[in-house]
Every structure is written in structure tokens, then in C-alpha cells.
Image (cartoon, rainbow, N blue to C red; front, top):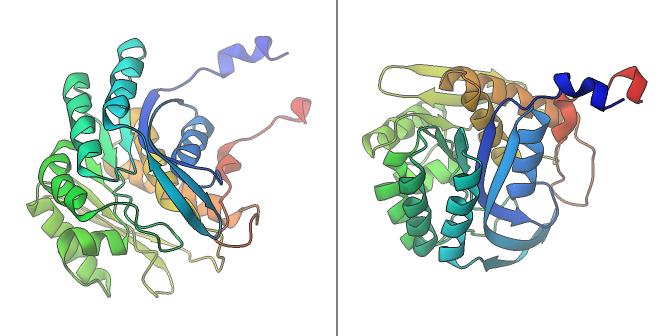
Length: 278
């Protein structure tokens, strides 16, 4: 039966994900793979770190040797060339330099950076020297950066308390070398969630409902992977952001309510199963 449906299961694009692993499955490279797959594309991976965590917090982080991260990037992409790249957790300077070396060899133009810095439970996931090189050398190499409010504050030194501060911070990131910025507004205490998309010629505020739930683990990873997937399939960056935000909103709305802390979201919200397979 599945063989007869093969013409309907063609993959749309190939995404290389460079990120850390989350043992609880809700964030990190696990969330990235689920997102890319649910949206109809193929995921390759380069794991940067292994975290021991659950919905209540991070217990430990073990780094993968930086040269092996670069080898994962190069060896995988040499065989299956990705259409786009999503970058997540990069915990130290050596990791970032090796990722940069890998990117130079691949020469992929569509790159989305989610600057993972703090876990949902509050644990720091990147050090100061890594932040400096990320801003100076990696930021200008990517198509889009997708920080949340705390990450945007760290990157810009601007205290963000409203939408105007978000726009100001986005502009500063452009001045630092970013081509496009999406600052996620979920941390602000507003009735609606406002996400700011900004570049030198465009400003767009995406307004979404705010759902009263603690089950939002992995939303940042999921959003950046969704954006990368839509972008890889030919959508404009702004349209990819819009579609990615809608996907994440539905994933939050239909969350499975797992775990005792910040639970995961529902990455399968985009999947429709026909009656014959139920």
C-alpha cells in the first residue's frame, strides 16, 4: 500500500541541521528533525553537543570534539548536498570556528541561525568568548538570525521591554552585520505575541495568539527549523517566517501535555493521516 503511494511522498528539499541533542526529545536536534520531516523535507545532522535534560531542566552538557563537528558537516554534505542549513547550539569558540570552516567549504547560501544561549529552565548553554565570535564572524555569514528576547538583549546590550525596543535591537543586529532578523516576542508580557521581522528595507510585525500553557519547550528550535524548511523550498524569508510561526502556534495549541516541567509541543500538527491508514 505504501509503495503505491510513493509518488505522493516525495521529499521537497534537504536540510543540514547543526545543533545540540536534547535527551528529552522536545528541543535541539530532535525537535529539528521532527520539524523538517513533518514539513516534508529530509534532515541531515551535525551534532555539536549531547545534553542530559528533561522538561524540568538541564543536568549536564557534553561537547562533541570541534573537529568532529566539522567532519560531520563536510562528510554528510559531500554526499547529500543540502539546500539550506539551520544552525542551533554552538557552545564555545572552537565549535564556532570549526562550523565556520565547514560552511566555507559547503558554500550554501541559505543559512538560518538560532542563537541558542539559555535553556528554557535557565541554564546557560554558551560562553562569553563564543558570543563574541558569533557576533563578529558568524552573524554576517547567515541569511537570518532568530533570537528570542533574552538572546537579543545579550547580543545587542539593549534592555527590551516593548515592541519598539525589539525594533531598535533588530536594527542594531543589522548594523552588526546581520542580513535579516526575526526577534521572537514570546517573553514579553503582552496579550498577543509579537514577532519582529526586520532588514534594511522591510519591517513586519507578526501578531499571534498567546496560549496559556507551560508546554513550550523547543519552540525556538522548531521555529528556526520550520523557517529553514520553507525557505529551502523557495519561499521568501518573510513568507517563510510567517509560515513557520503558524506551524509553531499550532504545535503549541495541540501540545501533548507531556512532562512535569516545560513540556514539548506537537510537531505532528502538519501531518494528515488518510482514513485508509488509521
